[in-house]
Image 1: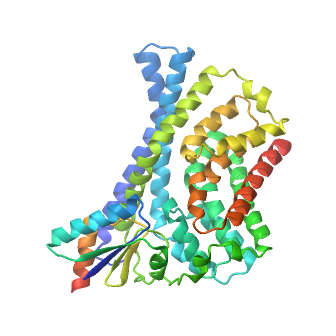
Image 2 (image 1 turned 90 degrees about the vertical axis):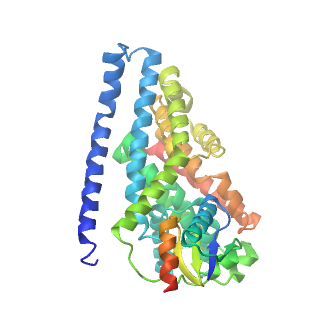
Image 3 (image 1 turned 45 degrees about the horizontal axis):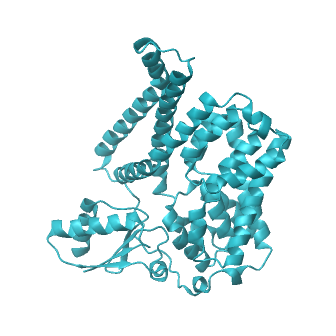
Length: 345
Length: 80
């Protein structure tokens, strides 16, 4: 970094620290402020059903939106360093097991726009990255992402979040490993291998802090703009479940001893494809009303990983048979994780 | 000068093209802006994270939407 830019960098770091403090303050005050508004200013009792539900809704929406902004911005700062183009260069020529592990981890931390999943697929496979490794990347990416992890840790605790992450990453690696045992390359659309793939030629200039901050801010605005309505919808549904579904209701129908509930939850999750930010508040409400943890996890994983729009996109590069294999192995993994958690937790 | 916008046609690609045109009008310049939507052509530039911006055959940005000001800088730099 040149000497000239140092003072502006220092000012920028100051601003960033200021933003962190304001963020932490808002986060800490969130519940206190809403509770004070309801009880002191409006004189309502939070034990009453309707005020309680509205209070929960306002508090939870504010909390999740704050978390989202913080997480997306922080990850956005890193995003300028970790790009799919670099991941590809990194994965090239590594032994299969190591590649699979790396692909799962990179998939988890490399965000990419869903409209990039086809170029990404062609870019990986066409450049000689094994098909199984590419699929592992595509499975891990939506399943374990920064938004899901931040919200899970907040609502389900660290232990459950780590379990979710490990389960998701293992599923991606195991599926990749199994698929790598078979010859599946002929099930990829023919044009993929015929596509000449070039390495990215860009000057190796490191982005400045200002550019990173700008990029992170744009990304935050972009993702926030797409996601906020799902958060409101998700928390709304969660609030209704919290307020009106009797306690222990789901324990009766979807408790740990009911394996069928896992299957139902997984299939119910498929058409619900939205995103982690919208699904987790619903999942949390189901959980608090007694649904078994494994069943809740299957539901969450199915909504984020078995995404119909993405499969429709992938249809362009995978022949139907491979698409079916891919879809059903992810579904099978999600069912296994759900059942496993219900048995062992 | 030849400018290419790489991307299958999602919102980001549209925004990028808009920003490029804005940058060009700021510069008072006229250039051919080509939209590349074929995956094979995008790949040939080595870009996997769309949208990508290519000026005179050189990838100058990918995976994000540079603002008009930034594109102005890029285009100016390419000229000198």
